Length: 331
Image (cartoon, rainbow, N blue to C red; front, side, top):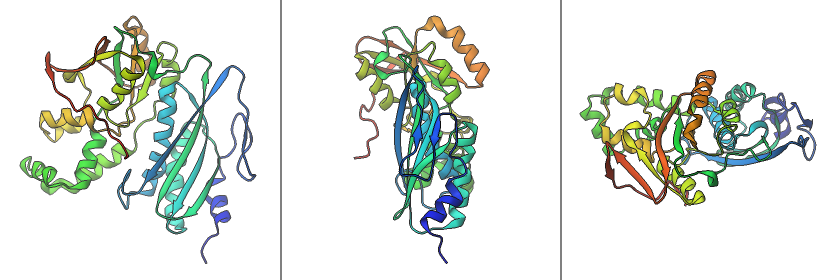
């Protein structure tokens, strides 16, 4: 006998609906939350659709983790501490094995953040996962796109390009297949894809780091649509330009392990997207404090450029390169 909607919710999604400031969790028409007077409420929503944001037959555990990660990444970009979240999920059927693994992945991240699930909805339909996440940010301390200043340094956390490489592998285009054959990696194709795809789904969250970063930084964005696309959002909002030094982009070890061509590596880092790392600008006088934060939270940080007047310039060993201005768009 198929499990009912309310039994499904009770069995898989009601074990984590209590937390600081949550007056009422799952079970009523609305949840109730308290907002401390010295904070503002940061709100973000993201939807993950099968065939667009993830491949068919992706591990439910990975889906649970990643669906929450992309939302708390937005909170991190604002310097907000995650507070609670809601979940709406469309399922082709009430597959309990899928739900068990999905909820494990979801709560593996939620538990790290002490983040309660306070409500949501379930429906029958093509697999689609929508999460709204809520965070608290100190008043007047949010890291906004419009706050970049000329002569600020430009920094990123972690590495760039691996999720985009995994997507290329997953689509198995003739171009990527030829590249893997040329690199004598075609026999290892599936294992390389599995490794890169899993690592690109289980990205570390930057929330604790970012709440402290907001004390010395006022401008940030998370990298979801590619470095060029996302830095362009900052430049437009702040009415400034920038210089990006391509040789300084932090690349994953897999790029050198697999001997990927340098121009392809650069392309993945600049345009690939799906990194969910922080991209931020900051007065360089705070770099010593930044280094201490990096070490304290074990979050790698790399300076990759400088905010300036004018437009965006991409430099490779001092030589200006052309670039594709249009970032990833869903439509």
